[in-house]
Image 1 (cartoon, helix red, strand yellow):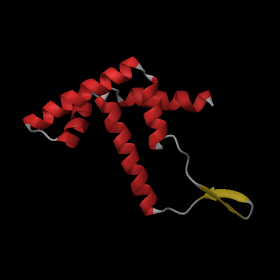
Image 2 (cartoon, rainbow, N blue to C red; image 1 turned 180 degrees about the vertical axis):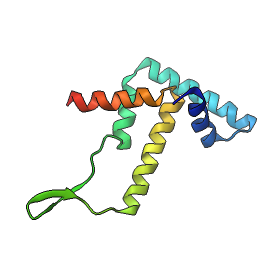
Image 3 (cartoon, helix red, strand yellow; image 1 turned 90 degrees about the vertical axis):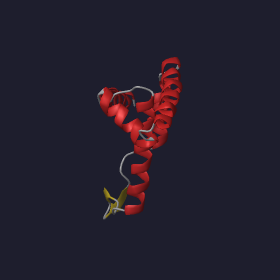
Length: 109
């Protein structure tokens, strides 16, 4: 995620008016400061948003199988992921940094 991608994410949430850009700067400054002060907040956002959650499973004939697709659950999870991505974009994180956190988390367990 480049600077323009992060800016696009932020402006899509708050708008491109001068008021929207001013609010975006304020929020980005707070989240940037928070992530600088405690980088572990980024992992907390990923965990709380469900980004790292595995797909639900059911047992079929004694074998684990993917649960049927629930469009309401998918929409809810998409909203959580989008919100997490927006918060991390406000903090100045790139998609590569987010992916690195996800990979670190998988290997830490």
